[in-house]
Image 1 (cartoon, one colour):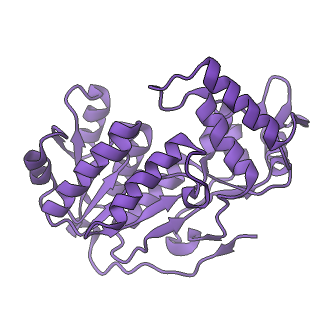
Image 2 (cartoon, rainbow, N blue to C red):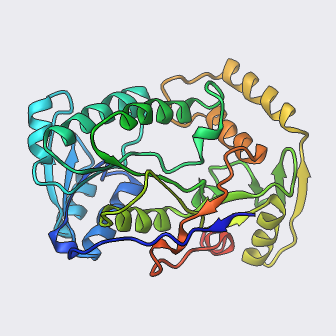
Length: 311
């Protein structure tokens, strides 16, 4: 059973004295992080690439966010864009060119600009507990964090399990039309789920917290497949049954077959990648043993059933 950490933040300055540099702000999570930072009164500068989502940029500007167009391959201009920042937050999404290479350039820019803190784009299960080569997207995060660990800058990774929002369709677990919960392995294995919104709230608070440790771990709800079944029933008022498709070995075989038939190497989240993530969660290795949910007590954690009820 997970425990709740009693670690408390140290933030002696007013949020308005913080200048947060945010990359990846046009994505779903990034937009939410920007909104939460502004809600707390922080100064926010978002770094965007040329050709980014105009609608998202307009929404950011309406919130009082400063928007700077940057070329991630230009080290000088990237460092200039980070000048005066108190923390660089990355919400970038992509494959190696983004998660490893672009983030490395962003990290170097933060160091060159004397920014004291860096939050990488992790927001996932604990990849450190998994062997290399088992999960492509998590391997990319591991590679970048190996570089981050060697850098002369304060770093904090936020681990949140799976985004609860994915259970409404993108994650192949709840079959709403059939009233079934599909799974492999053990229906009692505990897993960590956190909504995008809660992750954004926590990340914003961490960006304004000057005493964050190397890793912070959160879960909006710790739940087994049986708990997901109960949540679906509570959300819909209907009965759901469990559908076990075999052990984790069966899922491994399915992943290999899917990757052979439809490799989609340039897709960030091809079907087999989602299956890898689910397999790792159902295996239990990346389960977070202690949680930092109490670090920022104003956050109201959203349970699984509430997400499913609003799908």
